[in-house]
Image (cartoon, rainbow, N blue to C red; front, side):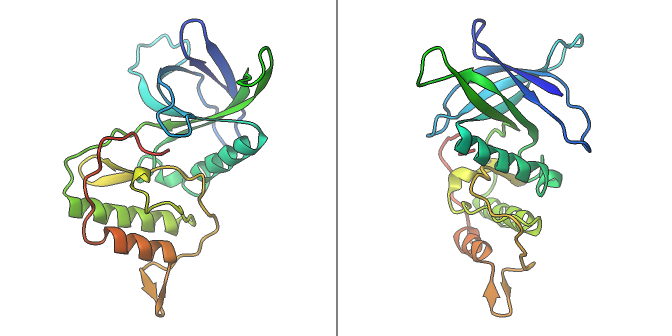
Length: 223
């Protein structure tokens, strides 16, 4: 079992838990100190500094994103997204998608009823800081390559035409965000067109980003 303590301030700390699967290695305990809340439109994403809990060794914190869900339906959607990160896209973490530290569950104060607590889930992801020094053509080609890689893993993103799901990262790549609406068990051809027909999302991505991709104003990404 791994414990995540989310510290909003010195007086407000929420504790959550993660139970590893039978085949996974035990995860360390973490403390996440929230830096900024509600960085997206839905208001369910925060940035935080993540450090090992009660570590005797001084380590630099990792900048992460905390994506939270409340209520049975929203928690189920977040659990599904975490499963995609941990299963089909596991080998792509830190390459074309953010690193996923896992999904934690717990209880938090209800936002609707004073004195009551409700179930909450929190997925911890690497925060990918946008970079601005890629040539637009190179950036567009990186998006296409990332889309193909994700499709070959059996996932259709269903939102790659929204530039807020794409973070220009480093000098030669991108990070694809937000798999909440993704489709699974996809069998994709290895090229845009095959036997006169193509994968719909890959065709649309190639049309949109094939020539170039304009630079994007400052944003944190959709997550």
